[in-house]
Length: 232
Image 1 (cartoon, one colour):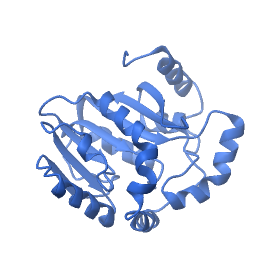
Image 2 (tube, rainbow, N blue to C red):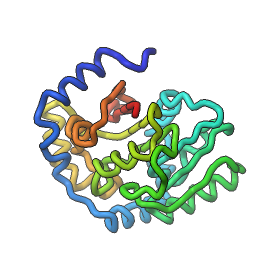
Image 3 (spheres, rainbow, N blue to C red):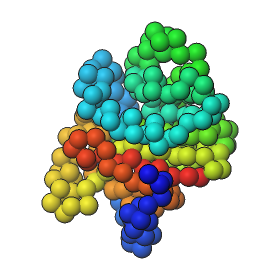
Image 4 (cartoon, one colour):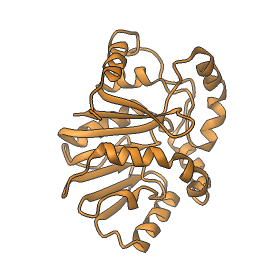
């Protein structure tokens, strides 16, 4: 399947030709301390609750990355480390997360599976402590709709990705359907308590983060999650 397709081009045209660059991303405001509290509660049940349901999207994201031997991969929002076993052992994996309880689960998983090619660090996704162009692939799975400033996080991801590297975002975004989007806006203040806002506007996010999508695929079931692939 080609990485670039006509559908993605049409979506990109819509982004560049609308008011996406100035409109609000979401009607739900979040703060780091709130996010930290939510994920502290979710740490013990995250794998059971969100593991199997969201796994097809994780597998597709790994396929999209096309990781080559020796490539440096940064996972932003590594959580409990549920993705760690999916990476090839000949790649250098770095995972960061804001939540220490989630990271503890990830460290336990990495130690149990003897993942010596993996390092796990506590860090704010909006303030990455890495030099420019440090990674070949930067990946944010199920993260962008829960951080206080999605655009800032995307800009940081782009900064630490090398020129020509891949930036992969797997997330739920506001439906283009008027009816579904209205429902998502109504329930977004509730869904934030289980780890995501339901009304993050994809075209606005891409435009304001200055990301040009090569492909946008719907994943999982129901297909309300998007896998966005970009190249720096």
